[in-house]
Structures are given as C-alpha cells and as structure tokens.
Length: 337
Image (cartoon, rainbow, N blue to C red; front, side, top):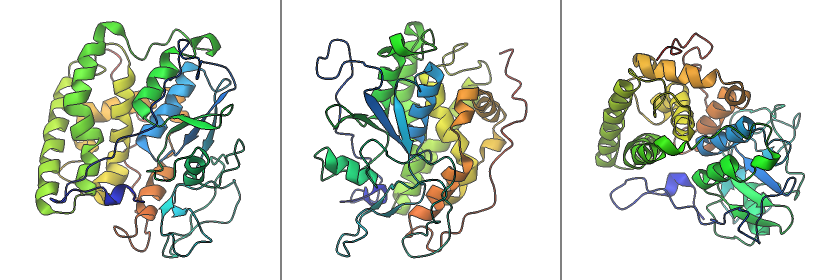
C-alpha cells in the first residue's frame, strides 16, 4: 500500500492513481437511487478535492439530506497495533481528544471542533472504511461517498460526486435552482479543465511537490506558471472562468489557489510567484471565498497542519510555517466584471 508521495514513475514524475469506485447515484440506477438520509460523505478538509465536495453539499443545501464526517488533518498509522504495517493515512478523532504527533513523534496537533467522527460505521480511519467495503488495496483517499444501506462505497472520484450533488438530489435540496454545470458553458469549461486547470494547476502543484527528479520538477513548474499566467489574463476580463456564471470549475480552481501561498510555495516549491503577485487571481480567490457556504468549510489551519505534518520525508520535524497567505476577507473588487 502506498500514499501519494510514492506515486512517481521511473523518471521521478508524480503520477496520480485513478479513483476506482465509480458507481453513480441516479433515478435510473436501482442499486443507488437518490434518497434523503441514505448517503454519507467522508471528508478531509485539507484535501482540495474533498473540500470542494463539502462546499458543494452546502451550496446546494443538501446538508440535511447527506450527512458527513471530517478527519483529523495529520496522518497517523492506520493499523496502530500492527508494527509490521507501515501505512499512514487519514484518521478520525473527536473534538477535545488528545493532540496528535506526526509519525516520527514530533509536534502536537489539536483535535479541534471541526472534527466529526464516523458515527455511521464507527471506522477509526479512512482505510478501515475502505476495508469494511471490501477494498484492501486503496489508495485510501477522500472524498468518499458511502451508502449506509448497503455499507458500500458508491464513489470516490470527486468530479463525479460533484455532478451527483449538483443534479441528482434536487428534490431534497434547499437550493435546487443552483446549477454548477450551466449547459451553455459546460463544453468550454470541460475543455479548459481537461487541457489546463486540472493537469497543470490542480494536479500541477502535486507534480511539483512530489517530483523525485529535477527534470520532472522543472517540467511541472514551467507548465504550472505558464498556466497561471493564462488564467491571470483570462480573469482580467471576466469574473469567473466561464464568464458571468459561478460554476464547478471556479470552485475547483479556487481550492488549489487558496492553498497556494500558505502551503504550496513552501512545501511544493512552487515559488516563482505567489497568488499575491497575480492581482486577478487574488481577486478571484477573495471573490469565491466570500461565498458563505465556501467560507464555512475552508480551514487554513487544517490545510497547513495536514501538509506540513503528514509527510515526514518532506518535513521531518512537522514544523508548520507562520504564513497563512493573503487576507481573504479584503474586498475582491470583481463585482462589475
């Protein structure tokens, strides 16, 4: 079993593993139909993919229909009683539990009030949840959309979970009219995602940070900042990536950009520029952050603590740097674009 740090090819380039639980909740699917109270989300707030899913749950007004749990940001041994099992990953703790240390015994990272233990299955880790559902191999990632009725993992691919939340549960949503996938710009957004936002920015920061050769890092960082320049120019003329409508791709880009200055410029060595050096990207981040449902589940503390404490090979003593990034509460000034 491996974690993201280990997913590199022979040239030292980071290669993300594909999600493998890919069932779809739909009125046309007798196995997994949309029902209120049946499904549960397992979330790591530090993970940009999972964070976006939880924000979408709130944006659609589905928190009363789909429950959720939130893990501690610091990875721990997932089988603490087995000295021969080295795997570390996401674990559940309750608010007020004893603080955790990193896997080498350094640091002290509190169990805050944001944590929500898994009271559905009683799993102590995300790995245990996967094992309960019959998956012994992993990778044991979040988000996880879990079916309480059949005790199975429906889906662990964030892009597919976003689409389900957007359209399949509207009869239970308090904000059913919000459409995160507007038909008139969907093809444009999908192309932008497939060719630039996902491979070169969302995943691009990981390609920089988890590279194991200079050549792999140099290629990734070049593509990342070329793409940032393109997005800076695009957002100089329009409020959102697709024009005037806030959509799923804006949320996906935001979740990477909001982590950029407090984490990635240091931890992933993406330090050619900061988000603060891009006026339009900075305004865009502040604009999306000002949406109450997005702000509700954005924890800079969870983000920083996870990255700086969970991979001892990159940060042995789990020292968490001081900088939290730019002031997200400042006016974004993008109302008239």
